[in-house]
Image (cartoon, rainbow, N blue to C red):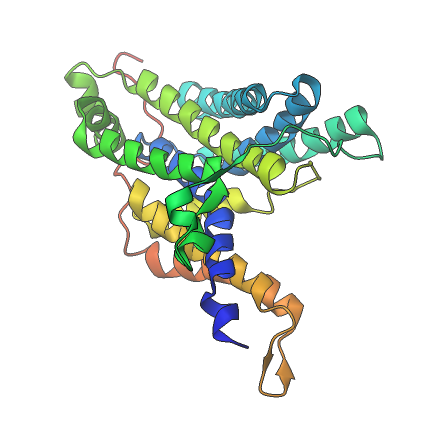
Length: 314
C-alpha cells in the first residue's frame, strides 16, 4: 500500500467522477425534502435515466437529446411518486420503494426487448470531457481536475445555483417554508401542493441526469441495476450534508473517495496480508451506514419532511 494508492492524482480524479452521480441524487433529495416530501425513488429515477438515455443516444445520435430524454423519464417516474405522496397522501417510503422495484424490473424488461442478449451498441453518443488548458498544465492539479467530464463540472455549477436558490432567493424561502410549516405557508398564499409537485419533479430530473451520466459517460452502455444503490447513497449524502447542497456535495465526495479507494487498493497488502477485494468493495456501503448511523440522530430534517399535507377545507 502506497501514498499514490491512497491520495494520488488518479484516485482523486476518480473520486470526482464517482461522486458526481451521488451528488446529483443528493441534490434531488435536498430539493424534495426541503419541500417536505421524501423521495426514496431517486434510485429508480437514476435507473430509468440511465436506460432511456442510452436508448435516445442510440436512436438519435445526439447526446443533448439523450440527456433530455433521460431527464424526462426521471421526471415521469418522480411525477408518479408526487401524485402518490402529495395528492393521494400515501406512505412516501412505500411509494418510493415500489417505484424503485418497478424501475428495476421495467428497465431490465425493456433492455431485453430493445437489445436482446447482444447488449447496447458500443458507438453511443457520449457526453464529452472538458479539458481546461491552464489547469491541465499544472502538475498534480491538472491530473485531478484538468480533464473531467462535462457533467462533473455541470454538477458543481448546479450545487452553487441550488445553494443560492434555496438560501438567497424568495422562491427558495417559500420552498423551505413549505417543508417546515406548510400550514403557515398556505396562510400567506404559498401553494403547498404546487410547490411540492415541482420540487419532486426537479428531484427526478437531477437523479435521472446522474443515471444518464453513468450510462453515457462512465459505462457507455446500460446493464441491469447499473446504478448499484447510488440513489440510496445520495440520500445518505443528503443527510450527512444536513439537507444543504454544499454539504451534500462534500458528503458525496467522501463516498466517491471511498469507492475510488476500493478500486485503487485492489491487490494491495498490509504487511504480508493481502486486502481481500470483496472487503474493499463494501467500503462505500460501510461509509454510507456509518454516515447515516452517526448523523441521523444529530441532523434535523425539515419539520414537515415526509408528512402528507391536507389543504384546509378538505
